[in-house]
Image 1 (cartoon, rainbow, N blue to C red):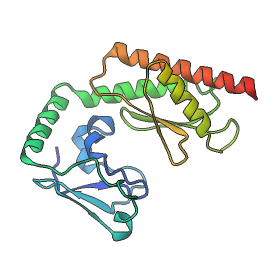
Image 2: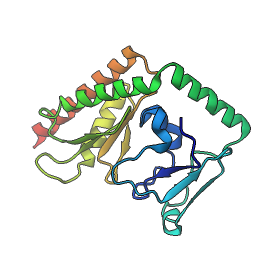
Image 3: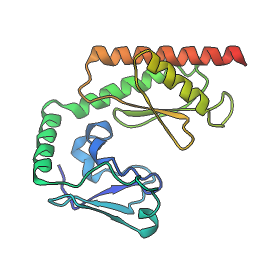
Length: 207
């Protein structure tokens, strides 16, 4: 695995916590440190050489997050680094990057199969096992946060926690553990399927 001085982030959508989830969830671990996403401008650098300790970037970018918005991926220490090395060994030995890609593809295909019966689905996106589905009002480009929240609550009632996200809170993010069992993953897909179908049917009946 390459080991340069820096990891780059996208300033337009500052994923300051990506370091902790990127391996496996987002990219092939072999190319994490030299990955290039479309339209990424490398303006914010996380210095990781030897001992993680600083995030640096242009003042206008570093001042952009609100109070408390820049945190969560904590500074390193020798014990933390040793633990990180152990985690990387497990990721490689258990081929979790490949599993993340396979499960992510399965999730996206399942969501895509629902587009005709859930017209609120506007976009399905995300590499690896960090996947998001965006909802708009049917036939329009207007964000539909109400539908997103309805699906989230319905899934919670059925025992599945999904995370709201997006600028307009009209997206749901799925981020299962890399070690999730096949039976648990299938159960989650069933809950997502049921929740989307039920909420779409209820909205249609009300219109």
